[in-house]
Image (cartoon, rainbow, N blue to C red; front, side):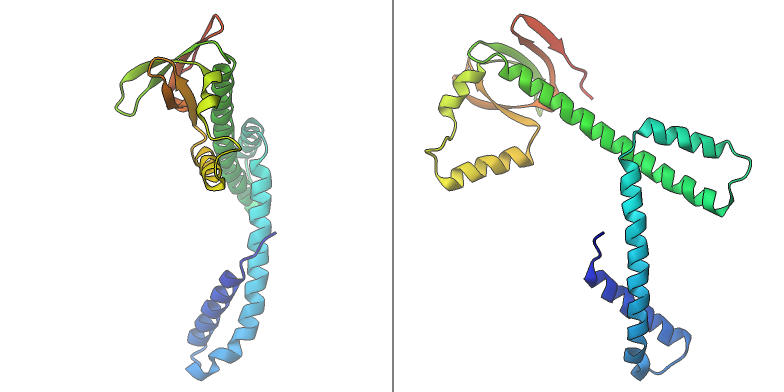
Length: 207
């Protein structure tokens, strides 16, 4: 459970000023109100942190499971205050879970495409993808040949770090060797609609 100290002090000063105004006290009393406001701020931030942690935990549950629980609550005749809060938390967790599952599915699909292309090794693979201008492009690649043109251990430290940074920032891009152009290229795995490799053809819907 992480609490931002800066937010606590900001919250405390805001509370102290509100108390000063509501009680019609002179400005000179502001500092005397701060200690209690700070204690109140700590309690409130801890409460919020517990709620946020619970919501994050719930968001790790399968969306189908959360949806079933939501439906169960919505079908009840009465919920009460606790039930209403529970329903609100479940709905938030459900949307977060859907987003997480969509991201995981997209990441798994990118990795599957990456492995398919790499499986060609020294042979050729045909990759069909959509370019930035919306046009379709078919590229004949030879994965194994690329390693002879990439930065390896003999490259400078800054060059290798730059390559790692690019890979982290753009996980959807895969460097490949364009067999027809005889030079390295990058393809956007997210826009690949077809991969022909090792005698098999794999097609993917583009979202």
